[in-house]
Length: 223
Image (cartoon, rainbow, N blue to C red; front, side):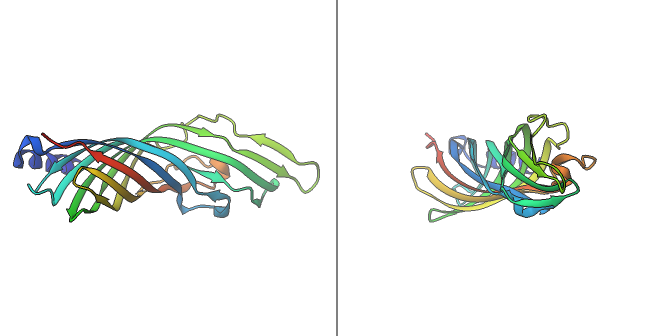
């Protein structure tokens, strides 16, 4: 991130100030989890909102190569597929969704050629809050089924709030600054703290966030 900031400073000094453009981005995340996940079949993809602002700083005057940091609000998480699985308590079934709301700050190196865009770079993410709407039905070997809802639905004390990851994507950008982008973003680290073995019965102890993003962007023309 420090290297990206230094590169941005160098880029600003190498081009005229009026070449720097600000813009907006909005779209959707199609997110799930990656990593070594227990009972993986019970965790499904979830759709969430993403959007924010961006700054495009040309490195080469004709716009072929530029640096583009962004600040995005990003909803990640998963859906609990109502699939039965076996635990020490008997047969269990989870339903509902879990939302993790992040501020993502990617710093992208962007190549634009004849309207085609290729971009990639590191990303820092900060977890703002979470909302666990999971309902679990337990059917013991002996006795009647019981239904329980997630306790402490918004508690994030057992989660890592700071995350380092990456982003890469392709897209098309018109001359007026309007663009359509398809991206993939992932994390290098687990989002559940290593000493937290009770979150989702330990299923997500080695889980990382993963999402495909489809978004529209608009870079405001410079004067």
